[in-house]
Amino acid sequence: MPKSKRNRAVTLSKTKKKGREHKENVVNAIRESVEKYGSVYVFTFENMRNLKFKEFRDQLKSSSRFFLGSNKVMQVALGRSAADEIRPGLHKISKLLRGDSGICFTSLPKQEVERFII
Image (tube, rainbow, N blue to C red; front, side, top):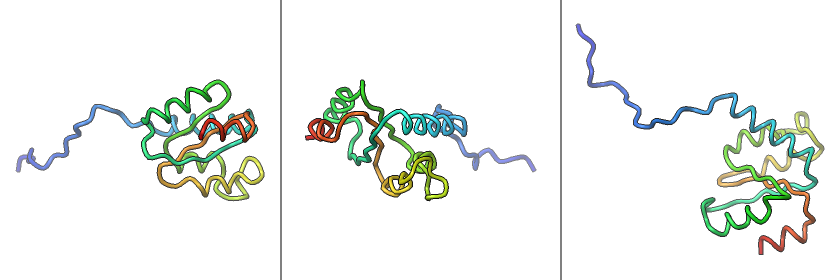
């Protein structure tokens, strides 16, 4: 019998998957940021395209690095347990990555970062 053309899955998007190489690049970038910056903050957001969030990122662009995206990839980069973490205590940060969350690496003191947030 001829092959039916009705039950064929058709993709409607033109985008391609990022793949393993992209994930490895993100993991390496996070690990480099751990070495480069002194502090790390985990934050949650409702809308990353919010104007206030964009202003916050622009103000801290020179002294900070933001990572948004797949929580699992960020958890692997930081280490999920004490055995595979790259610095002591970083596996505790990976447990905080749930839902719409991101990581901010910065070299600014805590008071200055809090001033930007408020």
